[in-house]
Length: 291
Image 1 (cartoon, one colour):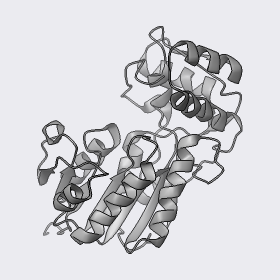
Image 2: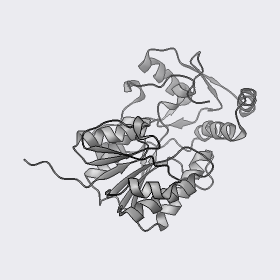
Image 3: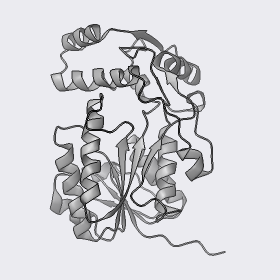
Image 4: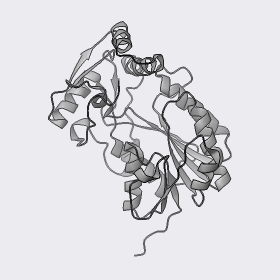
């Protein structure tokens, strides 16, 4: 049986935790791909993948050149710089100019103009831009990464924040990547204009999530609740910027208010495999990577 031929797929953020997994899964499927980065030297070397760049989201000409030959763009969102919409819009405009026909955009669960979590408001702006852009698109609203609490832990493995008793279905990077690859290769026309919410299989409180991280990693992570005022004071004394303080406290508060508790069937429906519970995840970032 002959191997199906795929159009070339461009992947941004391929040096990061999500983009690198998307690229690896595409390589395993023998899909031709272009891997874009600000620093191409850091890109993984994979079968069928061409490194492209340097290409930053806000450099339209560099992005256009890097995207030449691609038909689908997997746009993994950039870091919160305060100009995320402008950067993403520039990247999409460059993609259209390069002949890209479809964009799969990695957004955030709960994206809305009045979202509690600051970054979710940024993502909603990009979603609105894509609605009017002259390119087919699918929006993947990723749930909260299961790895995030581990990265928020201090060096004593304590996660502190005002997460309350709200629940969320923490999701594995591998599951999000598998959904993106299924969208890119298996059903490229079935989800045009769709907004897909990708979650884990169970909704956990932060205390329960951190307990599961401890069991999965074999390390004594623990969660200590804070009030919003305590969370602000501690981060202010650590010297974080107002922007950083708002971003992280609003992340906790979004969980606390319970608006991210939905569990969806997107992972099993698109990939044919069950979503991964936190207890079965085998990769955890070192503590202290986020504040």
